[in-house]
Image (cartoon, rainbow over all chains, first blue to last red; front, side, top):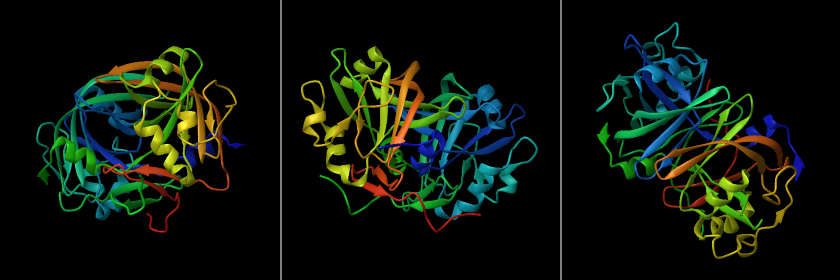
Length: 173
Length: 173
């Protein structure tokens, strides 16, 4: 075991799942942000968490409107998902610039990415400060997706996106 | 977009990274738990979070001793990592039953898995309840790993473990 720099250790812990989190701002304008710091955090009730940088435009919207959708983009969403992760919605409308199609969600105001492998609609039940991010914990209120193709995107430490299958031959036990 | 059951939606959001979190109990006995609900949660300071089921033996140890190590197991750790994810340390010693080799960590009492691709040593700075789990937020105090091989394990919804490379040809932009 050798000492690694913190940056190198984090890079080597990749790839990470790559989601696009949708939200709405105070005026109801939708936004879409690339988020990899996401995980489930309770079985019963079904809770998900996202960790959002204080500086992100989506941070304001989620804090005020208390809703978000975690979209797991399909392989053919790759370019649009990348736009969501590399531009700010503060001065642009990523529902237009990304080239992705956004549709009405079932239970929340933020939209869903049409054709997402999975879309998990959440209502914020609590939030916690952690350094330069806020953890938003969301109760899952609706779940949709594409039952025919569950492939979605992951991101490497070199900021490469790639699709990954969900099943593999190599396994234990 | 079709409605998915909550279980199906969660399954389709896999694969997830598969880590082995080490901790010590009140008597100083080390334990090792398979954990996929893990993510970074702050750049500065470098903070990681793990989400641990209340019923897990490791939950007691982390709550009391306030330290853990997130180990990203190497491909040849697969069988041992699986033992850590499927048996309880309450009545066994997984540092022996897993067949993995545990070595002293640099800054914390929980041990490190020898040969892990990455090992991130953490001191708990806060904890939050979320349903049936607790989020433990850890300040990163040491980072080690294997600089020659960063491949580590992921788990599918069917509980298959598999190793994944960190670099891919397909990417954007």
